[in-house]
Image (tube, one colour):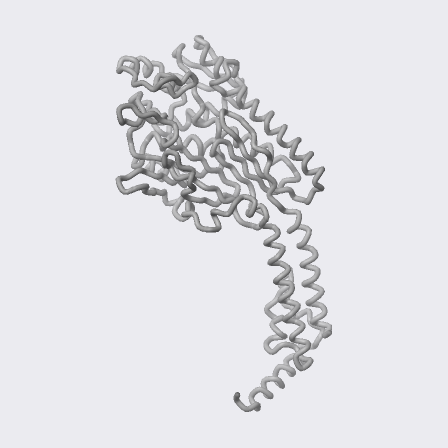
Amino acid sequence: MDDGVFRVVSLLIGWFVAALPQVLSAQIVPLPEGATMGTTYHVSVVFTEQLEAERQTARLSVLQAEIDAALRQVNAQMSTYDPNSELSRFNASRGIEPFPVSAATARVVAKALELSELSDGAFDPTVAPLVELWNFGNGRQTPRIPEDAEIDAARARVGYQHLKVQHDPPALQKDLPELAVDLSAIAKGYGVDVVSELLAEQSNLSAFMVEIGGEVRTQGLKPDGTPWRISILKPVEGSFENYRVVGLSSESLATSGNYRNYFDVDGVRYSHTIDPSTGRPVTHDLASVSVLANDCMTADGVATLITVLGPEQGLRFAEEHGYAALLIRRTEIGLEDMATSLAVGRFQPLGPASAAPAEQQAASPWNTLLMTVVVFALALCGLAIGVLVSNRQLRGTCGGLQSLKDGKGTSMCEMCATPKEQCEEFRNQIAKMQSESPAE
């Protein structure tokens, strides 16, 4: 074999051998489903190196225990279902002096108040009395329509302006003794962030996906080099059909909808989303809102905020504040998509690739391996033909090797042992022979 060809073959073999362990080791590993915040969570990770089955199982077990502990702490801080949580004890207190809480609770409440200010109260973490009044809270009973006097009385105990937060030392303070805080519109997103930050600290993970009750955060790319593909359900009652898909890489997604949690009375639908300005469920035709953001707490809160505002005002808010958001509204002829400028092209209809089951996506490293083998085989075949046919290199620029470059950008021809002058002379001879040959 020609010395130059030998060098190229050696280079290709070295590249293949170097890439093979990485291809084999990179795979999506799902953790068992867990329970938290009245819903479920799902976590998938990508290890930086291939682990033996026993070691991987042990590492996943430890990782899941850490995740469960972190989420139990979030519940102990912010749950309205646990009477002993920080938030429940603050709500039950009737004092107006600062109430000590954890730094985490203060952080989430501060974010909620920030969104309240931005939306002029459309997002209000003190809406708890109205949620309870409409039987969408902890003690949900038979649906009923409250009297106007009841709504007015509950609204008198609502208002984010009556809530203050301090960070050093962390504490909450209210100037209305009966004020109560409900963080359910933002706490799931915060829980996703907590788990994501825990995973980001793991030195043996290169990528991951965290989902709690539909709120998602990702880091890195899948082993095949593509973003994580997250589906959005079609916002239709009783349907679990996928409607849109969005690719995420180190990004968060939260979706808020009015098509699951509601009740009907005399043919009128009453959504669980309460408008603080009226004290009543929203009445617009917005069915679902999906928002992208760096952190999931923000995405979660903004999705709820837009759901309260409705399609026109909500789209305007998202556009003005630079959010990529998809709004889906009900019309007489079906669903209609509305997207901000940053969301155009992000939320795609599902095609055959999007509908691939999780186990097929998890097997993507083997597809990459197969492609590597095919490319390697084709390269060897091309080189062999160049040597065997008339015992000469392939016609063209060094059998096509000039277009190939190594990792430093050096042409394969520059690595060839044949002097450049002889190579040029050889190509000229070939061209002369071709010009003197009769046309076929």
